[in-house]
Amino acid sequence: MENKNRNISLEKLCEEVKKIARSTGDYLKREQAALMKNDIELKGTRNYVTYIDKEAETRLVEGLKKVLPDAGFLTEEATVAFEEKEFTWIIDPLDGTTNYVHGDSPFSVSIALMKGKETLLGVVFDPVSDQMYCATGKGEAFLNDAPLLVSSHATLENAYIGFGIPYSLDAKGETILKNAMKQFRRCSFRIKGSAALELCYVAAGVSDSYFHPGLSPWDVAAGAFILQCAGGKCTDFTGGGNYIFGREMVATNGLIHQEIMKSIIQGN
Ligand code: 2AM
Ligand code: CA
Image (cartoon, rainbow, N blue to C red; front, side, top):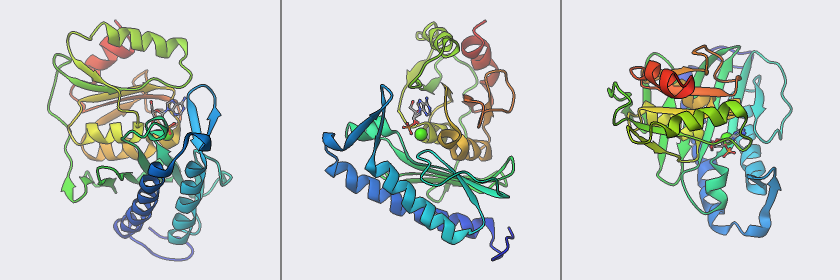
């Protein structure tokens, strides 16, 4: 990759991004222990945000500015204003906030780099289990140093499926959850609470699928890229490609995508 200030390979950039994700994740882990109920503000009914979110985001932005000075930012906490640039970091400093404020896990730091509409790299770090997921394209994604591969489970029967309930559930989202409920006897469902990580679990072949209405770009940009690099598939609820900005995410190992779409998302 080239920019005004330096020539840098994506692999080298990714190593720098991993260091920044690790130090921010370790900060989150330390602060979780010290987090007291009084530190929590309420944003909507279930959406907690803390000073820790903002501090973590500030640390990420400062670190990422140093490695790629010309890039813009799209961030959950909006500590930096969005500016249209050639390269954009899409970051969530703390994905899994509800788990975090309850002293639970998992939670993660999620960082993606986009050039226009193309994702160039994705890093998702879980500081509690010390899992660093990353991809820089070329059909390769990694958990720590091990290559990732999606599962080979091809049917809904006995599938292991993650999903999430958005803070504000609309009618379409509710229909999808009701459709899923009809499949409870055929497969196993889990809610783990960090969209970024749940996409990585599909990439790692742990889950066969993940779906979630109402997600924002910073929840999914890095995880979706990691999943695709591991051989998986992401679409929006119509089967199209608007899953980063469209607030609709269906992610699978590829093999059960059609069945998930038919039985759960479109509900026929
Ligand atoms: P958060 O922890 O950063 O808030 C839980 O279902 C997962 O979905 C988490 O990754 C959570 O992100 C995200 N999430 C849930 N509802 C959301 C919404 N309405 N907008 C954005 N992210 C949401
Ligand atoms: Ca999030």
